[in-house]
Image 1 (cartoon, rainbow, N blue to C red):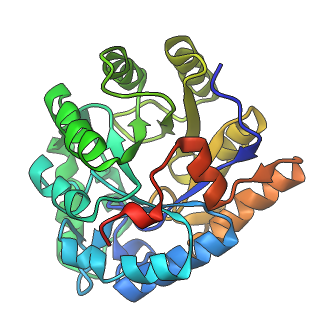
Image 2 (image 1 turned 180 degrees about the vertical axis):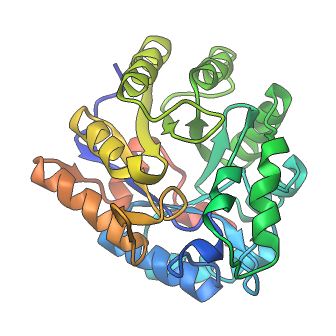
Image 3 (image 1 turned 45 degrees about the vertical axis):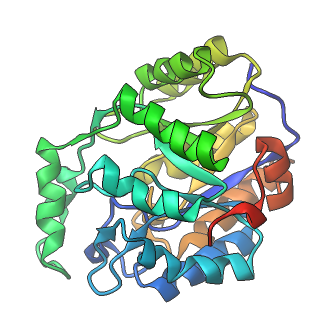
Length: 312
């Protein structure tokens, strides 16, 4: 079984690189909006803020370090939440581009996709006809011919330069069962050391489906591979977000919500902002008698280096 913990960690993925500005007016892409929504999410109960950067004029995902620096200091000044910066970047970025900002900023945490995969979001394009920005439609449609790359060599490089080099811990993103075995490979080699944090991901085309049986199989597989040396969390895309997070919370897991993963707060109802999703899953957890971890408690649980050791 996974390592026991007394309180639930809520992560919030603020903007991501999947959804585009046409899809929701609530999706933040200007620095001031990313900062404001991140701060509000932390105030609502998120102790980890998972962040991507966007071009402030067009909303397109960008790897530019300066784009991150337009909102990170403001978030750090206003909240004690753990900053988690993506190494996934966006669909059009190379591995080298995806690492520029994390290497410069040296955050406490980074996301790390545990394998290469087809990452298909092209189906979203069929839902819209009028686009806010010209880049959006082709960005989505071209993912029918896109492979998100993270080879074994890529993963080892990321772990060494960010983990060993800068004390970064990872949100190990596992989109399918094979990704758990990839993670086990690095654990067995001693490159990833306990305690580590596993994010089980459901409902992305190219990864494992959002099915309850898949949920339990992924969790059981992680338990077999890692015993009590890991902590775990769940995110599910779209309409599966809150049901899967609730299920995870009831059996001792942590949860991730946010507009990166779902734009909605209920059936057919767009979320006003990230904080609304955080507040909803917090309310559900507390009504189940569960307690929410503070940023300080999250740092202690995951063995993080502390906010005073980052590069921003």
